[in-house]
Length: 581
Image 1 (cartoon, rainbow, N blue to C red):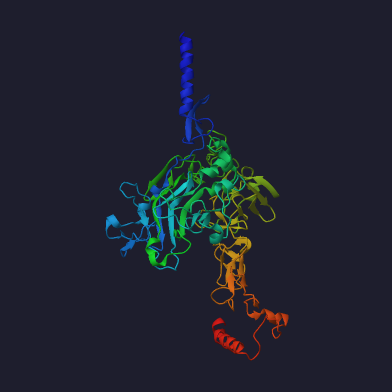
Image 2: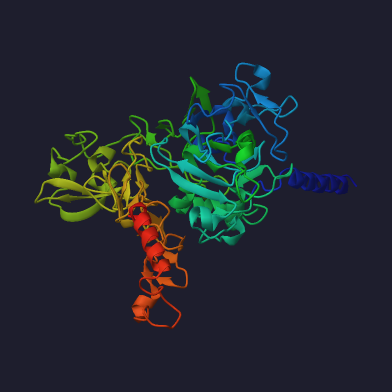
């Protein structure tokens, strides 16, 4: 009887435990870096991959607005309700706390009514664009773990871009475009995350899903992190092993969810109609009541704690690693090249701990180094490193049991000693590097000036626009070489006199210099739509002149010579020509 009761209680406990911890063995929490276990040799440390808990990252950011004086209230001004242009009794005054709307109200805990929010100045300088850049900086590499959510107190903007940086704001890459009309605003077909797949999950899309509607429940804009996770982990994120496997093996996927900064580019406020109401410009502005960014410090799976001290986030590194991101081995623990931890195998992962520096072949050779630009690497005793080797590839451990003997900045663990040149060359450089010591970037990538040479993010992809750039390579500052008529760091903008049409093409017509004549209208800057009686690129020719029938009685052509109508037309053309040309 007691045995049956015990079995019943045990079965109940197993059931309750499985409910309380839905997936304890399916995917690890990675919240422990090491634990003591008992072996035949006694107590030993068992190391495992570990990472900090996901948290609200807005508590640690710094916000910057551009232009810096775009916040409303200095001088005080009135603004209209979005839904009613005649209700203009709302006031913004920076000198009165109850009426001020400073940037920090985008991140505060809502505690009073109405909701606290940041607000820009109104569009009083229309038709000059009302554009604002909101930059969120962490001075630390972080990994996003949940959707980015932006709540607008005004209507959602007609045009907006969310951008990311991996080099502390030095260069920027688009994350997602938002518009009421993607084709018109950004020359992109509208899509949603649901249109993507595992193979296209990194595609940068333009969505119209969050740029229409002005009701109370239509204030939120998302950047969907979890929906992208779901392509690998399933709709309810149950198969995290699959996601972790992809993050482990696909650096571009891991980098996609990694940022140092985010930038919200507000390009056009919510208009609500086809045309801007110039009589009530005080109704057009931006207002944001909340921004949510959840993530964790990137510690390369070598730490569970990230401390915030002196306005700076830093990983408390384990596994004998060091650095802000635990991105290198501690001194005297360089027995093998540094490597990030691995999520696999589930549930504990692999720690890839740095081990003590041990040389089994005598005194480690010395190097003459010039940091950070290395032009050569001289081995003091090449025969001691690898006797009589010529153009042979060996692992760093075979060359010498010390990391300095095969100095590739952690981007390769193999090198070759070339006897003829008396030098060592790294082989199979990773992380988009190349060169004798993996100290240069591959073509199509440029140097991340804020990263150390041994950082796996030392080389950043150029992201040159294929339609606007001559090739996919850029200079050391990340600027691409643009085709004629194209400009911008990534060659995705057109110079004056050009318009984007599968790349920048010279304008055939416009409303500034190349006017369509004789009543013609310019269509998309690519051609003039001429009246029936005229032809030519700018509608400058009579159609009958091409047919040679202007003097005939066909009824289609110019008026007869000497007629009053012809004299009047000649006078008008003579008067207008200086304006046209």
